[in-house]
Length: 138
Ligand code: 5GP
View 1 (tube, protein in one colour):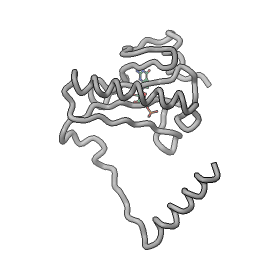
View 2 (cartoon, rainbow, N blue to C red; view 1 turned 120 degrees about the vertical axis):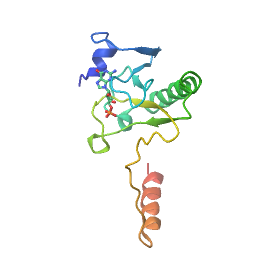
View 3 (cartoon, rainbow, N blue to C red; view 1 turned 180 degrees about the vertical axis):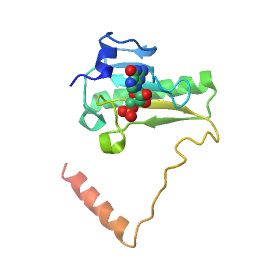
View 4 (cartoon, rainbow, N blue to C red; view 1 turned 60 degrees about the vertical axis):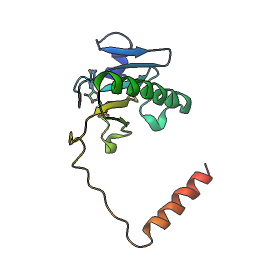
C-alpha cells in the first residue's frame, strides 16, 4: 500500500529531512507537537511496528535515540517521547511504520488527558500469566 510517506521517500513529495541512511529517512512532522518533532520512517513500507522486521525496528529506535540526543542539545528540551502508534485503534493515521521523536518541556501539558486505570483483585496476575504463556510459546 502506498502512503504519503512512500511518496516522501520516493521524493515525489517534499519534506524537511534531518537524517537519511539506507534503511530509514527522518523528517520533521508537518503538524508538530513541538517544533523539531521528528518522524523516523523505514524506507521499506511496513504497515506498522508490529509488522516491521525486528532488525529494522531496532534501527529505527537507534536513530530515534540519536535524534533525541540532538533535540536535547539544540532545542534545550527537558525530555523526549518516543511514540509509535500501531493500528487504527492505537491512533495510527498513516499506515507506514513511523517513530515519533517528540521534544518535551516541563509542564507543557501534552498527553495530560490520558487517564490510567486500576486492576481488580487478581486481574493483573491472571493477565500476566496469559501474556507470559503466550510469549513462551512464540
Ligand atoms: P500517526 O497518527 O499515524 O502516528 O502520525 C502520523 C503523523 O504524520 C502525524 O503526526 C502527521 O502530522 C504526520 N504527517 C501526515 N502527513 C504528513 C506529511 O505529508 N508530511 C509530514 N512531514 N508529516 C505528515
